[in-house]
Image (cartoon, rainbow, N blue to C red; front, side, top):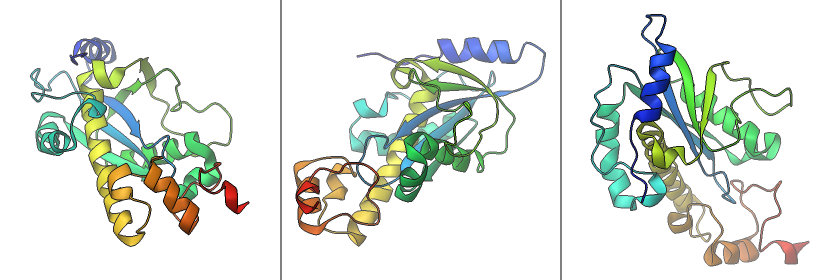
Length: 223
């Protein structure tokens, strides 16, 4: 198991602070990209050179933590980082803008809740969906310097923090939506493909929270 550290984020912060200004680095991670239903969500967590070196014990990529461990970690994560927020873009946004546009909308939602000077972004993955590329894919995000880190949610503490916050927030939303939309088992599958979710699609059809611009399994027989 990869254990996160602060090496990458501290190196980036030293570069960003070379001019003497106090700036913050935003660790960013997404959840819900591949779900059939529910929002695309983005967690943003800010750290600086003044952030304590000791991050919460047990902090990992959210996918490697149990639901209970993720929930327990939230308070410690919020105490450790300088600021944090989670943004969401609903299924209508995915249907309208595609998943990349929806991620940008979710990131913009998260940024609207943060009021600190961000100097750069540490983004999990290999594809820089943050930077505007001229395509009509949602809002233009602030033109921060973006550093991509493969497996950043596993390797970098601040990205792991963003990952945990986003995962817990989205899971809670999906549990609420499950109460309002029974039959899809969202309280367990969180909107991702599962036998019960596909069975629900087959029996009930798509809900208002499904990504109907996608080819949804279970609906083929209704075509």
